[in-house]
Image (cartoon, rainbow, N blue to C red; front, side, top):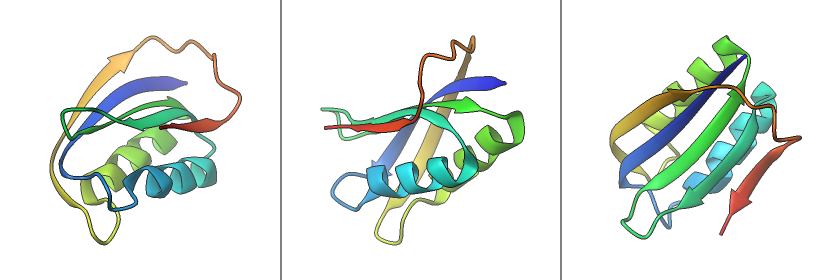
Length: 90
């Protein structure tokens, strides 16, 4: 079990990034959340199998078709098992 906090920079808002992340997280069996930040970044917490979390981070680096990802900062955290599903925060 692995948990990370990811912050994604670039053209990542108003391009379907949160829905892209939610769809892929659900496919991979990852729980957590994703939200837009006021500074123009997208932030997410992913918790799940090590390989699944690594795969969702790779997907964050590409993003959906209209996104232009400049960088992804990833910080590992202690797994908390606090989520039952993956949420989008508005």
